Image 1 (cartoon, one colour):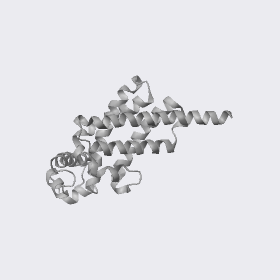
Image 2 (tube, helix red, strand yellow):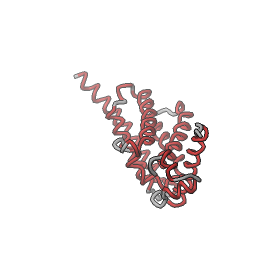
Image 3 (cartoon, one colour):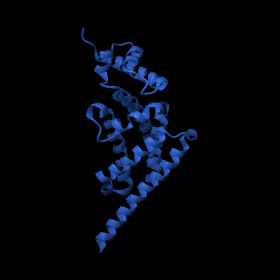
Length: 207
């Protein structure tokens, strides 16, 4: 009997729910595919039909949370006056949404969110990366002009963003306050670098 799209979505949601529960209880490394399939009430083979590996499942959970964070940020973006404040608010909003999953964020950062990760492991991560960078590029264009949102600029930003995420995943300060201080400094430096670059190009063109 053919499985309907609705039934497939219901199975996928059961797997995601099982992943959230198992990863939070046992940690990413401590959770097996057998644990996941048992918690979802499906066969292991069925699990792999939806997610090729644990990293893909974990990143799908994070991607949904990151999207919620971006959506909340977009509701208020027009009231944010400066680029550095906007960059800070975007990342802070995402961090709030993925905070319940901090216990398993670290192990999948490099493979799932890296632009050099394997396509099988990081397809969800690549989608999340592109959507986040699209939001950042829009802010840069609106506040610095279209010439400021170059591929090099966005690559530099993403390297800073991954560094903040990696630090956050291991930050034991109260409410990860050290991460927020680091994020504030990083966004200020990044925004200042765009201003400096634009000034240097202008001065070079007038000589």
